[in-house]
Image 1 (tube, one colour):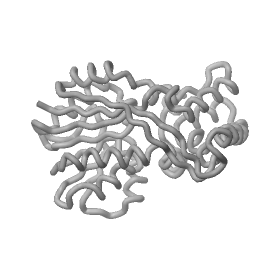
Image 2 (tube, helix red, strand yellow):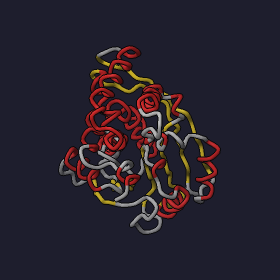
Image 3 (spheres, one colour):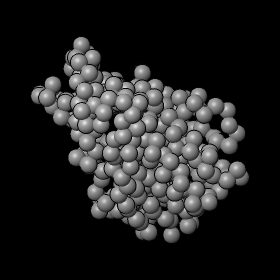
Image 4 (cartoon, one colour):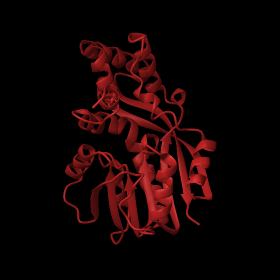
Length: 272
């Protein structure tokens, strides 16, 4: 495994830190919104792609009809295992390791597909959208969200600036990936190439939560592959980086019960 792969992989302790610290900070509010949007459609057969540690899955189980089927997938076995462990045995959900660009399902199997903050990592977004189109029934809906630009997400911008400050040469740049797919025109063009014609996008602003600024800093630096990049540069700097980021977050949002502004793009595409 080369360095690039190591520094972009959700492995080791990252899934647990991702769920425990980044979950409430970055993902919970959007998971609630995603489940609400899916629930309004009253689907019978739902596919969740890139389910991660199961935050949307949990919300979907609380929102969907008891008669609805749910298949939750992720390309990363470690993330999927954590999701299964968190949610526990539940006959209403089927778990499967799957790549969004090669879905292991028959044509027209689902009437709704949901993907929370996964499309930014797809190896081939157009191919993934073609796969979503293929496995959707006619009239089915594909819903996903993707982060808006980094400058509209100040906590992430703070990490970006910290990396450039401490590592002026080749700074750890993981966050450039998830915060690079925000242009509605590009998103619509990719979905059109994927086969969709009825496409809508909207910007959604929410607030993330963290019990304290240190937990938030730990999540931001140890809950994503940026952790591996930092360790590759200088592992001994990690405690200092975490403390510095914690202090800067506290200055803006307080030392405890942080409410952090977030902004993302929500896309909805219907198969016609």
